[in-house]
Amino acid sequence: MCLSLEKGRTTLKKADEDIVCYKVLVKNNEKGGIKSPYMCKPYKLGELKKDKLPVKKELFRTKTTIESGVFHAFKFFEDAKKIVINAIICNCFGFFEGNYPIVVKCFIPKGGMYYEGMFGNILTPTCQCYGSKKLKVGEEITYMPTVEDVEKNCPETLVSQIKEQMQKIMFIPKERFNQ
Image (cartoon, rainbow, N blue to C red):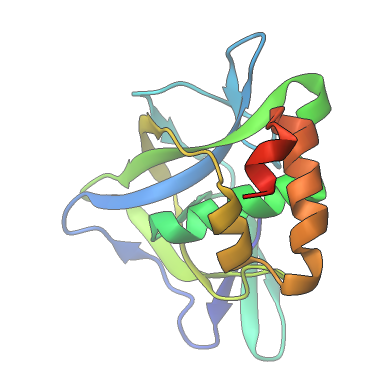
């Protein structure tokens, strides 16, 4: 996941208080482990993560993109939910190997350094995000996308395809989609 920063807004900020944010992680149903979807780093609920890697930035004409060196998290729960739906559509987190996306409430701790920017793709073009050097991993938020979520957040042309994918992955009975 890349964090896009607007031109002129590329400096680190210091958190005056704990900042609530939401991280999409991958949980393995059989093994119970939790990991980050792109870097595949292990996570544990309750731990304080510290990223010691240097921040990797790419400069473009109108923006700067941060690819690594910070923990990416969403500012709003609604945006994290859209990413979960997107992950199901793309089958990008290895669902067939027993993995599925989860949303975890996290905190950028008071005094922690962070960037504020955007993340986007075809389904979620304007998600507000943070990139922080420290991240307190909170609690898992139980969220299972519903048919209504799909219909609300996805392009109409993809809805039937997404419902079919959700049924395969989540073993949802066909009857639920025919309501």
